[in-house]
Length: 163
Image (cartoon, rainbow, N blue to C red; front, side, top):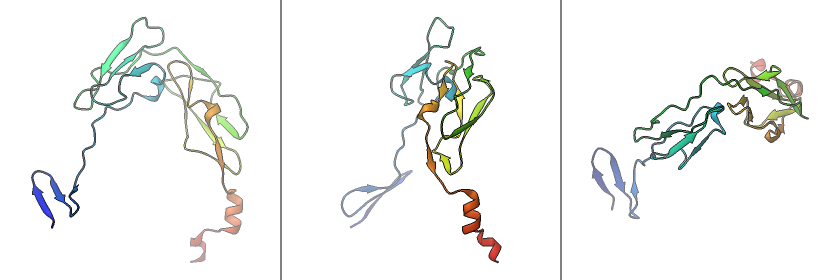
């Protein structure tokens, strides 16, 4: 026996007594920009009611922001123009970094590329945070093996070439 409950939303009671229908997703506030990693600490992540404290470099007092019921922050996460910068990531085995000698949090991102036969796993950019650290840490990056482009073209040519 299937019973239906009518309201603004539609829920159906299945034969085993479980309601089937839309589910609620908790409202959260957006995370601060990546450049602010390391300068804030939140009581309950980005969930409603969570309170975050953040300390801009060079500031003497913490600032606070709370996640409101509408999914917005009570105050913006923003530091005045930081005068910090990050050194270019060191060259590491399997990676080639294309970036200037120094990075600033406001405008530059470095793009690591896996060398031949390697593909960078999930990360495409490294950012300089306002606390003068690179995120993610270059030492935490890894590449996975992939087919060489020339090998793929010789042994697995584009299917469209046959038609």
